[in-house]
Image 1 (tube, rainbow, N blue to C red):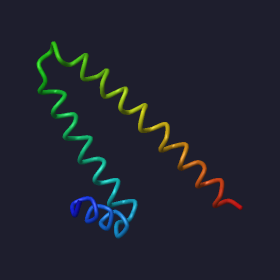
Image 2 (image 1 turned 135 degrees about the vertical axis):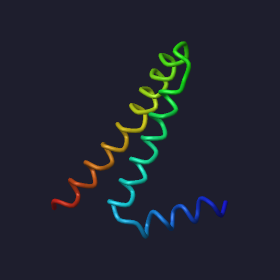
Image 3 (image 1 turned 45 degrees about the vertical axis):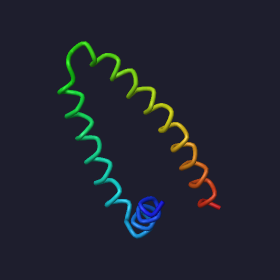
Image 4 (image 1 turned 90 degrees about the vertical axis):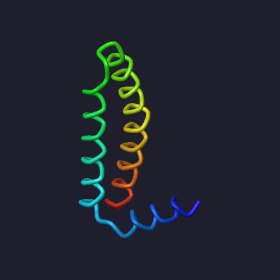
Length: 73
């Protein structure tokens, strides 16, 4: 799909600072959506967000630390 190729190219051309801004932007949108949810849906949304966070953060950090260990040599 062309959109994914363009996104990959954009990421390769970007610095970590630009990607951090993208993360802050997405985080802010998530906060806004979470605040606007009806109260009865907030707990399930928090649970889902926590699960997605754990499922993505752990592999990302494992990959980062493996990269860092290789770079130290």
